[in-house]
Length: 494
Image (cartoon, rainbow, N blue to C red; front, side):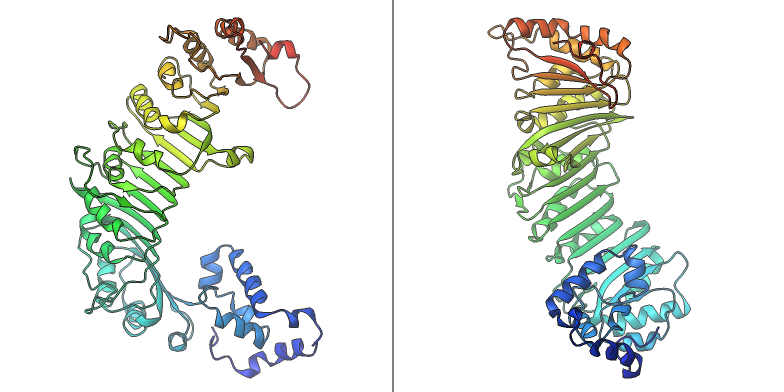
């Protein structure tokens, strides 16, 4: 690699003169602000980004065009993510690179022991150029990380991103001086990712990362007070926008009491959780995040008794129009869509998944937790990849959808279970039609065989007839396949 920052005039003379010979060319009259937008758009389209833009430094090609382009790029190196990547592999002219002013991306992903020149670059970068290090990304063993730890007990003033991915559980406690030095200077971290760690080992460090906007944690062990410790850390992160939490170990049982002080994360818009329901229920007991937009929660056990989760969900400032309920393999999920997402056929941004042992009980608890949200939903789509038989408590489930106008099901033999649930006595003597009173249509998936649709349609005949007599007609039909027009009499019952 050539000297990036102090390129000689001879290296650029040809290209610079070429552009200057065309003074009336449009490109020579573009303002710096527009050039910067073009460069940034080009950068975001690079794929794969880390390899091409950071490791192979393809941005250097732009700096070779002319003096003006070079000046614009170097003046905006932070926005354009310009920097020098230092890792186990030896780049050309390492001493020249380290002597320049550009930020340094420290990226060590290594399985073998760090020795020799790789250890020298590690020490030279982190010990003598710590004031330029903007990112540390490490993936490897605890033994190799300890070598990094020895030279990071100092201030890293421009540090924005820290990624630590341990091969196995890292049990040692991160010292208070890590990335802060003996004076315990303020951390400026924005992005923080820690994998295969215990909460006890990182809680003190988390408490010092008060500027974090993106937090990803993979926690291996838990204690009876783990959620309280995590809430304390989160309370000190007022700028947090993205939280991705994976709990790999089962949490000890704890009573779901309401904490005295609620942690309010008013800027949190993204929440991803994968782990045990007991811990999540205890966590949201002390958490409020009304600005949430993207929610993906996967519970890897039976849903525990729910007390605080409904309050947490009800605080979200969204109005949901449709629900997609799916049953795949061993799990089931609720996906909620706002009107705009539904109209534009967008992927739902709210998803709650469970991998239960007791399916009926978990469905009742999950639908109960979402009851307030489900009460305004106008469309429900149900999809199965196996025949549900009588395992799903349809009556209890559908009672949470009083505003439902359209029920769409793709569930093979499950049609009969739904038909039986609709035709049952729902225990309301004053109004026999209070159950799904707003329902207007039931769609039974795609019609692939006209000869097979009769029995399935007839299963809904008692329900449809009763609604017809009451002046509340419900249409039951199969969705026509794309192709020849299907005989309408075979598709629609009423």
